Image (cartoon, rainbow, N blue to C red; front, side):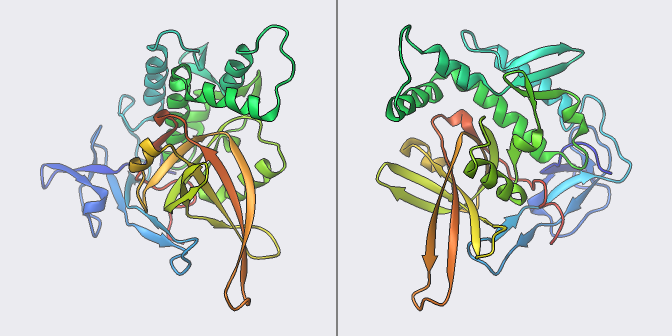
Length: 317
């Protein structure tokens, strides 16, 4: 079973330089990890659901370790070193809540409840329960603030590492535990690749996802609502009797819209809500129920581009 992170570049000794996976049209002999020079192999790009405009997803090429290979301990494609770096970066920002708790021996707890704590900390003595609009305004103020930037950047970084893991995720699970108010949270409830959109939809629709979570967004297009622009993601078929499609829809401030492009792949992190709308063909012979997973980006630390396959995409289907 491969171990380590999927890679978008590899060293080609014959050319004396690194080669992007997207450059190749076939595997080459002698390719090496760009970080520690162990043998790697190339995996070609492919298309999932190519005949369906709502579900089509282009999956990029990548490199992986050859069978029984191991990266050097200090290789940048080993997750533990990147996790330690994430922790250090988050702690370098003064006057912000530390998202990580030390457990010793380079093991950490990631505290997913920090946004809730920050919202609670703004409560005024003697203040009663806020109505929906007032609570929403307070939550937006917290999510937009710089105090949450290290937390968001760390969450996106952890989700990216989880997404890029090739094979077993034990090397991440053994280093970082995710907790919400002292209770362990499964990594499966923290990052949702497309093959788990249905799980995310059920959790959100049933109000059982109380913490922020990350998901992969593959951009299908862009839209506009009265309250602002949004990025529309490619979907996955829902597990319902009628034809349904589950897709993320991310509302983004105008100043960040240029960061997203059609076909681009992004990890997005935040709180999720669900709604539905139905589409019927002009002749009335076909219909689709769209189950939308809505999230709002308030700051740039809530997303990053990821040009590599995630769980469920790294084999041709």
